[in-house]
Image (cartoon, rainbow, N blue to C red; front, side):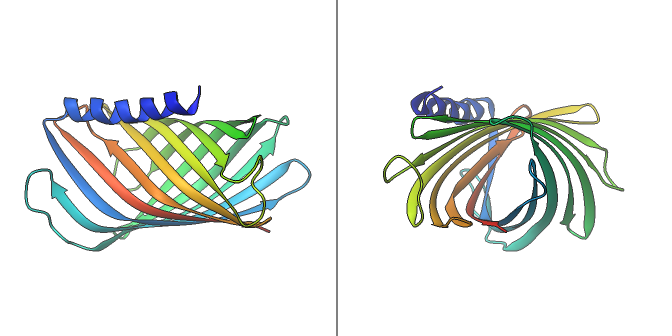
Length: 229
C-alpha cells in the first residue's frame, strides 16, 4: 500500500464518520509523550512510556465553544518486546492510567512487522489490550496501525536530519454489550537529533462514537521525545 492510498483511506474515513453522525463534539488539547527505550539482552527491548493530556477547548460544531482548560490524564506504560526475526517483534506490557483521581489498569499484547521499502520504512502493528478499573466495566480493544517513515534528506535518516511519519490506526472496542470504533490519523514531522535521541511533533486526530448519534473528535497537538539508553 503506497502513501497516496494510505492518505486516501485516512481522509475517506473522516468524511465517512461525519456523514454518519447527526451531531459532533470536538475538543482541542496537547499530548506530550516521552519514550525511553533500552536493550535487555540480545533480542529483548524495553520501552517505558510517559504520556499526559491537557484539554484547552471543547465545542459542539455550530454552537458556542467553551474554553475550559483541564488536565485530563497521565499514562505510565512499560512494554517488553522480543525480536522474533529481522522484521518481526512480539511484545507484552502493562499500563497505569490516572484520570480524575481514578486508576485504570491495562494489559497489552502486540505484534509488529517492520520492513524497508526503498527509502520508506513501513510498519504494521496489531495489538490487543484489556482495561480494568474498580468503578467501570472492563474494556477490550483490538487495534491495527500502519506507519510510514520517510527521510527528507537523502536515502536514510542521519543525525540532525528531518523526516516525516504518517500513522493511521483503527481501534475496535467492546465494553459490556457496547461496541465502538476509533480512527486515528497522525501526520508528524521529526528530527533525528543524535543516534539515541529524536523528536517528533504534529497533529494527532482521533474520532470515535460515530456508531451512535454523536461523533467525538479530538485534535491533539503532540510532541514525542524518543530516548535510547
